Length: 286
Ligand code: HPA
Picture: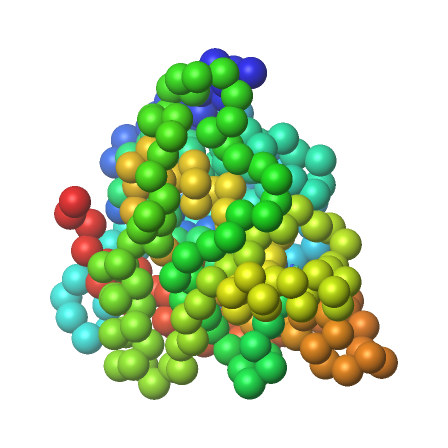
């Protein structure tokens, strides 16, 4: 199973190396509703996930399931970075194995990208925050019950007992804060609770997550972040607060995936501005 995951990742990496021998500098994973906001994305070289050997494709509404490559310039400086955009991701709640959830990010790192920016739509656990706010992920609580490092020892990707003390790169997080300030985009920060889904939480679960110290809850990101850290890549995470956690917006209010996608899409342009400007300025050295 583990050997299988490794050989599939190697297969994808070899395929991508043939496609473009020079790997992009970094990879940005675009979550629900966030995939359409990158300017000129449709003109960028692309591959459907189904065209990449070893990839499997998600079919969730709001995800395009493709890889695009873009050269991104910083507004204020001569810096530029080449970026792999993963539009869409595999979720465990769709029936994908943990290895399949981690696969695309692992393949990007095996190809040669230096770090991963994970974006997602998340439920907001802070009643003082506004919907559409962005939260820099400072840390996570993995409640999904999944870990891409589980299985027989030596999965071939790195250390089994991987340190998670600073999963979200402090330098990259600082770069996000600096660029957000320069662009005048308010940026919250907090802890992301990763759950399996796909049902949304009960109000009791939301109360529990708040007690545990989480500010956001979502169904992605934690597995990819762990897999990327095991391979030594840098990780940053950005959540868009698309809805209040169940019960926080009043008893009459219900959660709907369409609203989540819609809210994500309505602030995606601002998120793209922040993510692209920051990405162009992220330090890549170790
Ligand atoms: N809960 C879990 N995942 C989510 C939510 C939520 O409220 N909103 C967007 N993704």
